[in-house]
Length: 567
Image (cartoon, rainbow, N blue to C red; front, side, top):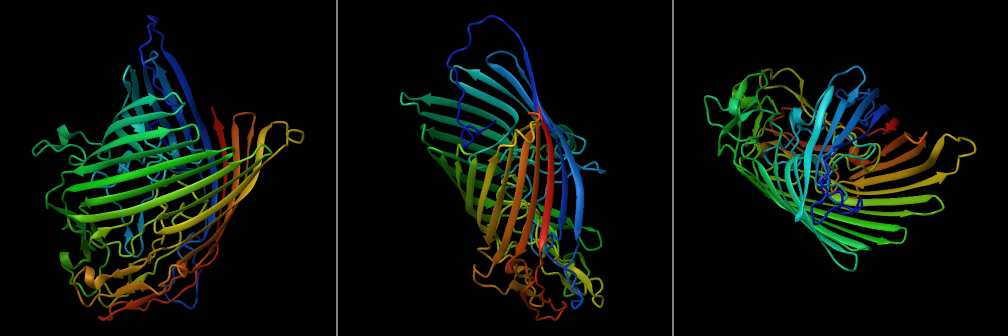
């Protein structure tokens, strides 16, 4: 799998310099995978309780319980020593019991709602829509590998992973959910040295696969466009590994020939299709630096990412049907984002681990991901770690908190008080707008006498905390839509130390029985900090919204039991 070997998960690089001289021809078939079942219980993920003293409180739900399952099959065909075909299929892919489909959560923008950078229009995670969200059967990946005298070629839809997994994460961990895949052509080669070190280098070409359409039929009667409107990614890998340390980079560019100012469409408050978003070209560059150091039983890893350039989303949001607008199409609250937006995202993570012969194991994670205090501005600074990079059971895994909900008259019914915007989670399952710290410990217990069926048994705990470097809510609708009657909304907390997300405590017990049955029980309690409170200053020159009352966040918890048969 791409860059697993580069990324601190073991660097057993693979090159043979000459073809095998054997004339024998035999196909070898292998199959591995797992069946996983989860029981999940959560309470108050919105971190709000019903408040009888508030007319419009933000208590959206309380207790949620569901089961979900997945059967993952990873068959492979080894044609000979030089050619192989690999694949990954998910049956009932993370399907909740009683349903037939799943959804990959996106970045959530406070007040406005879901803010997704569409695949092909600039997002670096290239899975979008039905390509990454399937029901009963998900043909997730199929790719081929060809080993030549000069290196290895990999082509097809393949997993993508680099470093700690904050930017490219294949989701192959036991509790992984989605993972990044790319339609990719990749070439890798290696240069070994006498001291046991090696230098690996590679180049790759990616094409997004979100459309799931045939351009020959899609283009009949019009101009045939490549998938993602010519969206393509080009990158290079350079990785040096010494027996004690390693250093590498994964860097590249994303280009898309958009609509060159073509006006996209959105839906107004009445459900009518109206002209809105403006499409354009994208040119984004990224650099991802990874380093690792081993010292006896200790391992330290560091990854840093920067995304820059210009991006065009063609994005239009029907979000603010304020009564200050008329009921016409342009008055339905459509937000037009510019066709050329700057992007500047910084993400970094550090991990330290210690594993001891007497059964103890500790780890620490700390890092930073830039958020966006003005998510609808002309510069995008919010991207977020890939969702399969985990800190704890709750924080930055579930969409937590509740943003201030605005109530007032709409463009169509100025005299009627309706919910206009807001009530969406403050944080999504992409780690963003966070300066975080996580500490954990597990201990391996000898239970062979009491439970002879157990191969191993571990118990432990985890502590997670985080601060918001920027305000989660800081929206100037008046400036954004060039209308002086519209309100401005901003958090009252100005200091980063006042913008504290809170403290999460996790407990963990895990074991393997009968060699192949992995089980785990996780429980988490979140003591919310001020950042999850509803506490904003609303400036409303046109007097068009109801007052936004303050409301303190309440405790939330989650429990997850996992049973997983691995083969």
